[in-house]
Amino acid sequence: MRTFYKMYIYVACAIVALVFLMMSGPIALIGAGERGFTETFGQVSDTVYQPGLALKWPLLTTMHTRSLRQQSHQGELQAYSSDLQTMKLSYTLLYQFPESQIVNLYKNFGANPIDDFLIPKLENELKQTVSHYPAEEVVKSRDTIIAQVRESLKKSLLSKGGSLITINDIPIKNIDLSEELEKAIEKKQVKQQEALAQKYELEKAEKQAEMTVVKAEAEAKSIRITAAAITQNPKIIELELVKKWDGKTPETIVAGANTNLLLPGIKQ
Image 1 (cartoon, rainbow, N blue to C red):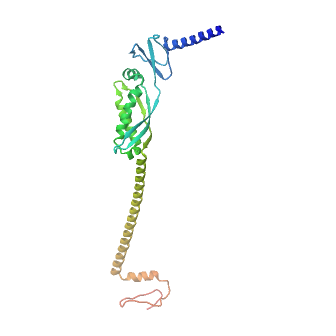
Image 2 (tube, rainbow, N blue to C red; image 1 turned 45 degrees about the horizontal axis):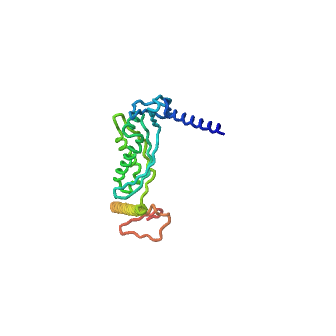
Image 3 (cartoon, rainbow, N blue to C red; image 1 turned 90 degrees about the vertical axis):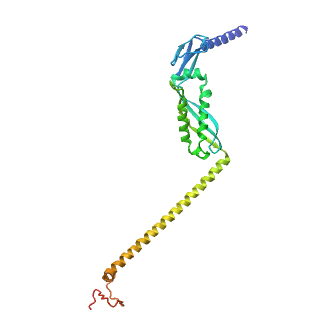
């Protein structure tokens, strides 16, 4: 029993020693899509290691690794519109570390540059941009706000060696307004729809009135032209009567004193 217990202790110690050697030994593993750099007694090397195995001083040197793949950060913040309405924004930050900047980021912003540097800058840009829009327009102008924040953030991240962090996108997933504000916006939208409907009916009535006027003017013009033609040539009346005659002798013919009306088939 004692022998088994001793063997158990030896195996456990060997495993711990092996893990310790792998973590603090002379060989470090850099995974696919990652880059590494070393730190010895607080001094950070500018050498960037590619994926694979890398040598380092055991116990004295730490190998830091950074993924170059796209990463995401979920966040929420409270912002104020230009009309002083409070709203909660939920966003996703999609970003990447440029290989040329991973050492610079560590030297200037420590082991967590996203939480310590990028997120405060992003949320400040979001708050400032939203503050230029009334609450109702924030929802409608979501894409415009995202584009403005993205471009502003990209400019602020520029350095001599390029962008400190690559910003791929900042989609705003949700905008929560107060219940009172949502009801007020809904009522306003209903009134706007009613106003549009009334405007449409008014424009329709105006067009119908214009058509009536145009039709009346055309008819009046036609009457004036016909009257002028008859005045200039009274025979037009006889011609029209002949056109409309059905071939039967009328029972009654009314004519003026100076009118000589001749119907087809009737001899004078």
